[in-house]
Image 1: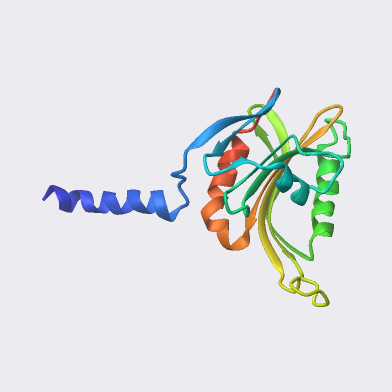
Image 2: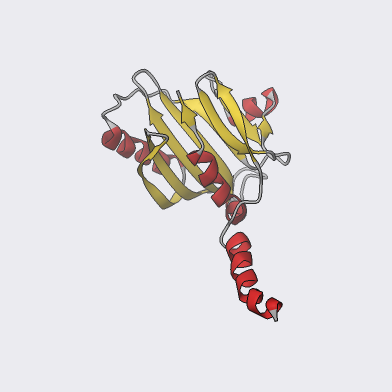
Length: 188
């Protein structure tokens, strides 16, 4: 009799936990630098110098870069080459949006805007992208489909860029976790 009464509640709780993207992975507070922390799942670990060299072919190394064991899910913290005044959120949002659309062959924007995290303003973009392959090159003809969540934090002398990305076919598995990670960011 008790089981009959509890059965609907069990179904609702199960649906909430598993059907609506509830995160069962444990997040661990991670110090990226002296003034930046973020909570990351235990499945993400610091990238090796080789990983960083392949993913960030730039003179400026990221402040922090993390990946999964299979090297397909990434989270990084970088300093943008562009500097903005903290009051330029709307203008810089348009600039960053344009940059995203120029990086990929196709972008489907899932969400964007300006929000507050721990009393600080962040510009965010959540999107799916497609980069077409080059049919002239052997092994490079397949399109690359990704899910990405990016946040920008503007300070007087730098802009911090927080980026999460994974293959688009793993979006359902990681989307809620990406949101949780981004909401956990603290900048002193």
